Image 1 (cartoon, protein in one colour):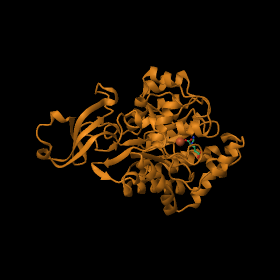
Image 2: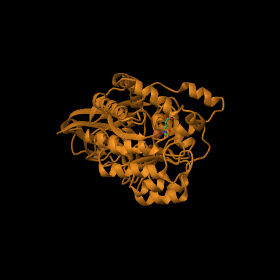
Image 3: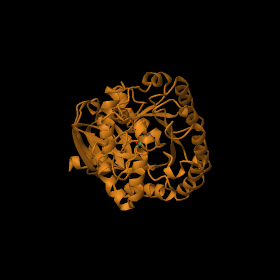
Image 4: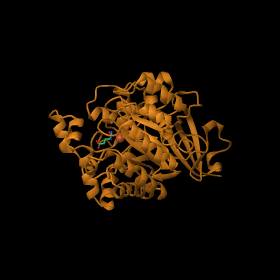
Length: 412
Ligand code: NIG
Ligand code: FE
């Protein structure tokens, strides 16, 4: 006996081994036991009547099921917000100018350091709920607004706590090398020492980080500094990711490829050499249309080059107070298509199968296949392209994580 059997459902499995677009299986059934997918296929292939096969049978009346969405790049734990900088930018001051004048990331650092764990948790919760409300079951959350060991650890603890309480799979990433804190203005090397010798070891020992990230950019850290961070991550057996080629081509992607990075993220300025390097290392290219849009960036990431090279592309919200105050994964699917020229199928692959790979979770989530977690989003749509099509309309009707029904506010 299976625990649960979903019947009369169209599955967008996103499984690359299924021949149809979206890995679609129509008029299907999907069985769940112990929180995992145990069987799926056409209803007509079921060996017996549904009631004979499962303790609970749920009829879906021809709705679509996709893997629970995966937002593989967020900074959703932070203090305060930067609406005042948004106003400045609308007056013509650039993101880089604001950062160089001590605003930008550093202004969020001040607010985050001043906030208690409880305050950070309470501020992050509605953002997490908003993602869940549009079908997200897995989210990555970065630190990077603490920039001292205590505050970075505080952020990671809040991220872990969100994962424990809120029925969301949370993956945490230590981003100590996000910006140079003002107290280290004249001693960059000492700050990198702190990241490598204190932050990474502490986060690793306490099991608080699943990966290590850095911001390789002219307003942040050089490739040399980034490499030191990657070396320290390797010592502690933590995989790496990189904010790379967002505002200029710093060669960060080539470096990340040498360290077998799980992903490189942003990539508007990615070069041909960078594409070749990440294609060879199997690194996922994470595109962040929210930041592109919000910073009014005009240089497009090299989508066709990534396609030609066979690089897996993921899409994420980059939810953060400075460059992407975005909590809508569905809007990101739309923008991936309208701004970056992805097809709706590529966009959805980017928030399911490829996003799982960007987090090193491809054996657990990201596609509807036997053996993976039953993380499933149900949608009142007649074709999966609708997930990239609507703007501001949310067709989510149900959400399961590990086979358990969770109630996002949209469906309550
Ligand atoms: O992903 N690029 C660097 N970090 C963030 C922005 C952080 C901020 O402005 O607060 C990003 O865009
Ligand atoms: Fe980011």
